[in-house]
Length: 188
Image (cartoon, rainbow, N blue to C red; front, side, top):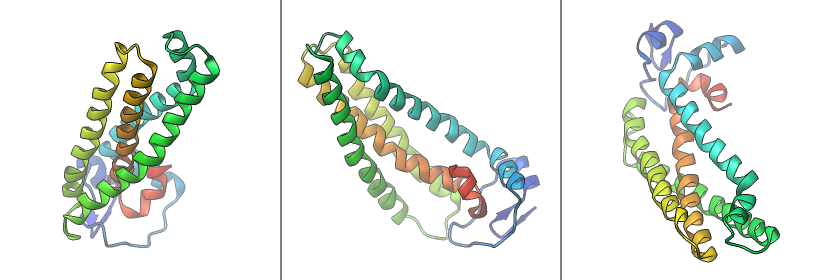
């Protein structure tokens, strides 16, 4: 059954209903397992978790093996220079991309009424996430043929900025995919 914005496990399982209003909150006492159960019943949340896992896997893999990969491409003479440039570009991209994504999310959500349902807000937010990831992919493709190390790092930097920009939208989508009372476990 659905009461206010509180969506019980039975109604969520039957249609992956999203809460109707992002501003109303109820203080219900849930056990840990009830919260986990509700989170697992949200198809939207599960899809977002899988997508975000792929993004995190790419970022961690690049962070771990990026310097070695660039060295293997013979773009740099020294592993130390490759690792420093690679790591610096990734860190600065994260510092720029994350707040940029937060600002984009704020602007998108500001254009919508507080009375809109979560599904309407998600419909407005997810295209920003898709565009950010698409732009990131477009910046990555030229790195396959670039032989100049500076140009390579610049393209990779802009790909990372776009990827980090998507993170804010993904996090807001995760939070909006479950009832307000279950957001802490959805994010975890």
